[in-house]
Image (cartoon, rainbow, N blue to C red):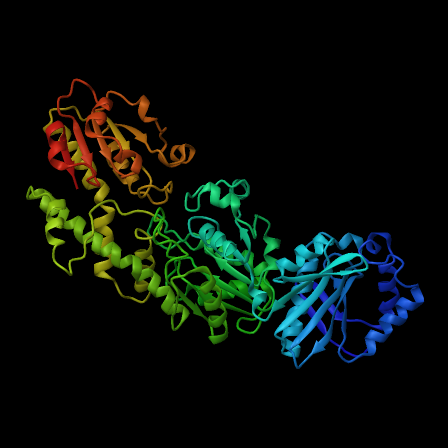
Length: 602
């Protein structure tokens, strides 16, 4: 045996071949299940084949491997080789991949083998390229090589059969990307990477969601059904073992808070555990989920080490790139915005930066550390939360002074450096959540943040403000309060998205229920089953709504903006002359609305 080495990857042992293994390989090659892949089925007689392999064993630049799978099979299952190593050109040929044990086929082992041996070759021989040739009719092998980053170069004819040349360049071992968590952040990431030439494993534990995506049905409305159905290079899966094919993982799962406003890291811990159980040496794991500074390295890295048995910075590396998805925004989409990237060292940062540069035309910004990137994400949304809290507070003050806030903002906006924010309900998975991650960490460090928590209190109280104003308007209008029928228009956390997460419309409903009002809900985008689960109320189509005492337009969906003031009247009790209309987002002209309604806007 000329060379002596062992490669171990996820229970796959790839060792240098010995003379004793030759007869086993020759017997594999002559099985009916194998012979069909050879150009000439009468390849060589057995003695000649053994002689041919023996010759390769003693040549300096030929590395032939025998493969064992320790978890299931107690015998060698295949072979592969690296040969024609050219140090001057920094290239070598991958070849003779053979899974000789029939029971071992179809288990994803080939992808692990190809990735492992290519990694071995790149590192040991300082290569820049590994190439191979495969017969065009061998579609299974071609599919495997593509998933490992090999790209088509050209084809030629040999013995009346077409032979395809493929190659993979150094760095393209990260061409196969996995995205874990396929919601409003993960799905756009996966689709855009796939559209830009990356092979993508799109993973989610929700198998029902995966089946919908496979059918081209986008439950987030961020991509759209047509675009999703046309996306190539993407594999939707709920099988964690598929993650073993990738060496570049992106975790993009929700990070909410619990009822006590304490960060709930269960989803990100669970996703990290799944990745760790399927992590291969040489991998990079990038986190996009919003967390407080330190979570990636202090909480997630130990989980990855424990589950994988690998060593941080030696066997795998991590990075952080904060998500900047704004649901419903078709302008600042992931392929247009600037992405902040960070890595645990220069090498990982270079790879992460190069990978995300493929994703976006907006460029990438290198944060100096993972903690800096984590902190940047939190203050992006905490700053917006505080600014909106200020406007909400002045809106309450101006209402008591009988001054219209929207008119004040229009006047103030004429100053060049005035920041124009609008009052309203502050919910969703970012602005209403992220500040609590920062305040939690601050309090762990014995510091109580006053401004951030004050802003949160004001914004969290707006549901009560709106409900009380509705009751006040009913009383002023000489209408009953108890048992009054109130139509809530819009229950998602923002306009033109179906997302119900942390919608503050629920706060309005909860406050109204304290006054024994009858609540009727309509939302053209929200899932009816999800609404019933979260609100314990049934959605009603607008064409079935009648005899309403008051309407609260909570969300300015484009469907609602098409309803004029006159058409809105048909939903009310006809006996009410000027019924109550609460227009939280100010979608109607105030002067016209006040002619027909007991009108109020925030």
